Length: 419
Length: 74
Image (cartoon, rainbow over the protein chains, first blue to last red):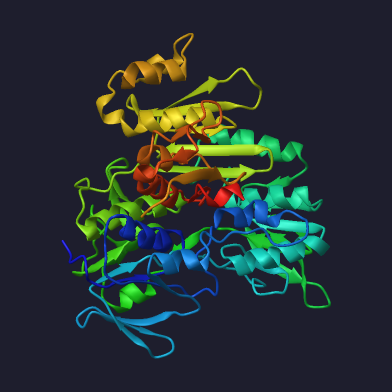
């Protein structure tokens, strides 16, 4: 596929970019590897930013993935605080914001995604902030020290993790969600309902099916409240929002690389232009599990695509198509929610109880094919469910009936089916 | 010359991805109840060092540390 001596340039030093660099060395690529990131820090983990990072206490929790000498040892050049301003796919070169031109043999977009902006008046008032990168998280962390009335816009995973963290810090928390339910894009309705009750019990207030009309300032110019479509003004000393992300595709578009809902790649993560690839949150890829093109925002997808592409680029044995099992997790205070597969499109959902209150899994089927599952406080189930999901194409006997039968035992079923 | 290795897990980081088990199932497993990493053998001979380092390098949260067996005895 490629020369093991060629230079591989990775745009984006997040989870996907960093993993690709490391995995390329694992796969025996010997040529130069450059990782270019526009943030000032070495590659770090984003998931903790809406979780443990927001807890009180002195000092900032450590989120960097590897220390600087790790990259030195592996001969990975990490350029942080630099952004790429242009890509010339014909000359195989990129230009950086300081004017430097860098040539490449293979170019990988791992540019990630940016938070979707609040489309209402007052979105830029002091005290209103998204949560995506570490600078955002530092701001949220600081803000939680002083502001007691917190409004969170968006009832997805980021919003709910923020809600749990803000409650833990003693804030009064209201979550506003435009749709009639929480986690509409990612979890089963039953899971969302349980999560709602859980947060309500811990004191979070919810306004579901509620549109934000505008953010209103106090006399000092700082945000003071969120006006919603019922006319109510929800008081707010701080407003955090997590209403989805937009893949960072501007550079790819400018370079005439095909872009749909993300940089479009084939089953081997190749873009429409030779020598250019894309992985992680920024790319749209054909999913054998979903049966269509999808774009996923998860650590799992970032890491697994990076590992797959490393094999393709290094020319080591690999599957003919990227087909890692998609999974996801969220920690919200006491609640651990995990998902596998694509549960949005299903016709049957069956709860498998654990015998412990508040700990269960829900398995989803469509036309009697296992399409995914959520687990709440049942991480052991998820290990089994990922294995089942990965093997589902050869598991005709794993049906909704089997799961609903008296005495169904997930662990035994997996043992039985996958032996 | 590579040395024998000692495997340590940074507490509180594991998310149960299971990537380490795929790379080195002689050294890593996932707990039945929590799906979190279980170290089956925390010392690896030099001949297995590359394998356990590879397992550490595919951990999405960098929870696995592989160090020289001599260095930890200070």
